Image (cartoon, rainbow, N blue to C red; front, side, top):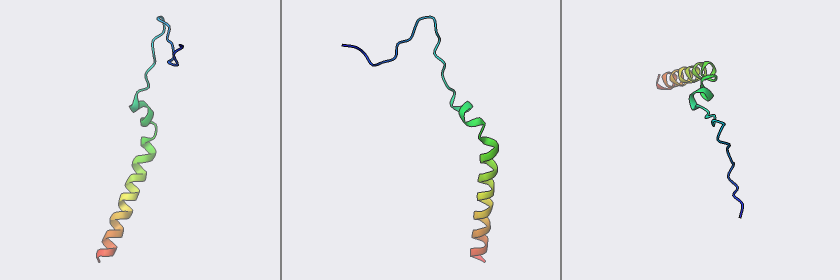
Length: 50
């Protein structure tokens, strides 16, 4: 019976994807967007409470 698992040769090293490298490129967009959302929510709460 044949196996469905991928076979690796002994000479090659497996490249592992670092989770941080996958996220770092989005940080300059995400942080200002979250900040704007937080300011909007805080302003909404302040107007609602007034």
